[in-house]
Length: 246
Image (tube, rainbow, N blue to C red; front, top):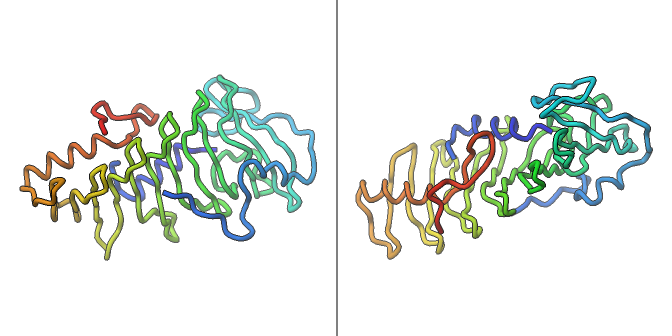
């Protein structure tokens, strides 16, 4: 499963720099521990191999992945699980590939239901619900298992309309959303009090912790500090910013 490609497209679609889990609708794929129960027919299928970009390979590839086929579903799809080639650790929990010809497709276009990705060290990295290949809400976690970023409300084009950022104690620090056709960014202090509102890149209002309105330069310093509490992508992986503090 191409997790990093998915997140890259999300960020590009939202034009951004830097919750709660949606309940599955009726008829949707169940939770990971129940995915294997969807196997209606066991099959003798050799492992499939992919390179680090997700391209199918006839043999194993260093830095790539391999896919174990757990069986077929009653409607002709597949239950599979992907692993890192080098570490031999799981990349995802069991997932459903709904397309009958989708076994050699490492993209998200052929997936239905919940996908949970893991880093090579075994820590949970992210989770996304897919509705027949279309992503729903996405959560990103730090290596300690804390949810740090959440993407919400995809439109018909798959572009997320809201992104929320949390500190490591689970407090909402920032939200980016489209409001009346304009990009609005709201910040909060860790105690839940409002800190600042930006619209289209300009500070509308900002306050200190007792509600006093801040000047322009004070607002900029405040935003710099609050951004330091967030979790950001570095070197093709996610990690805490050097200045992280709570």
